[in-house]
Length: 205
Image 1 (cartoon, rainbow, N blue to C red):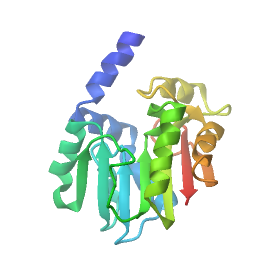
Image 2: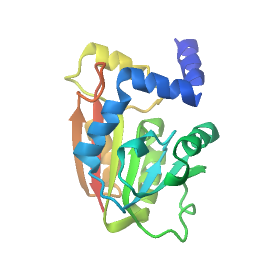
Image 3: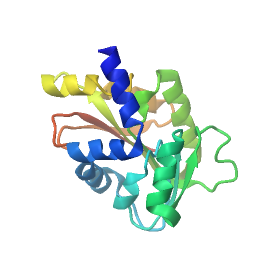
């Protein structure tokens, strides 16, 4: 099992294969619904995308001032090739010093990120996001989620995820509460073509 999981991680680290896999399971539809129902962006807003991957979310955003961070140089280079001047793409870990001198952001996105982080890492990152957000701004996150009512198939699929810290909805909410006392948490079971449960957090500064 460990060898299979390790091999899957290696394959999905290749941007073209990662995007192909996502599209097969319905990622385009997922992103569109996520943006429509939870992010609700407006043209001209400043958007920070933490763990942006190949920045595929940009295809669903209006004209915004977009900045994406990801630790994968390959993913960031793929984002630059696809979207060019539509945003800034930084191959780096986001730290408390990364955004020095940046104006506040209206929206911060963390899509499929928190379940890759241990609790202390997630709390630290959420604090960095809180500091980057304008007074009226929001952080919106999307992650796989375990839930007692989900199907056995969904639970098994999620258990194979590359992230080693998939949580329950309440556990994600507790992480966010350290920096965002006003957090709305919601389960979604309808975003992908396959049985799958997502946790969505809408966090206000």
